[in-house]
Length: 259
Image 1 (cartoon, one colour):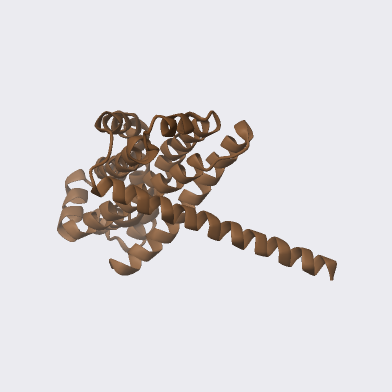
Image 2 (cartoon, one colour):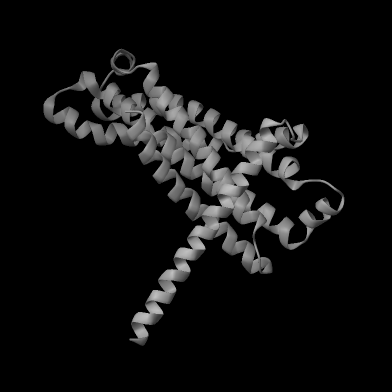
């Protein structure tokens, strides 16, 4: 009986903690959206974050995207060889890359690099009472710090996914030539003839939603951190895990809505 009671208490505590964090994220989302709609944000902070989060993330994202296209060709090549459907290689690799694999992998890479860094920065500012110092100076941290970061993450991930898709298709075409002997022109014709702008739009919508999810989770855990340096480390871990879960859940919902 003691084991059952203890298990129920742990389950209840985990459920309460989950609802507490979800409620905090919902409240933060509301405050960020209201501040953004009223135009209350720091323009210089926005530009600085766009450079730090978007431009500086471009090399690792493009490298990830290049090999993502190659992986799609390798996986599709099994069926292409079996059925001799070499003319569909560009369509198969491009369809999976644009709609699903590209946005998800780039989003997870972005979360690990940018989301974790954002949670660590805000967490450090929280435990060192820098946010309290801003409030003492009558400066609201939401429009001054959080809104520029949220907008920068959404715009950055959207643009990174767009560039990543192009590089992934190029990587898929090169791997198709090297591994399967499919000409670049044949690969690109298969891609262009069978895929529509809607397929690209689905991936870009997902990227914007993923960027918003990463921004909210990292900002929430950054500004609610407790416990000094240990708490900052815990907040970074929680932010990355929560962002990954949010990406998977939102991807599932968007896939069902935008089929």
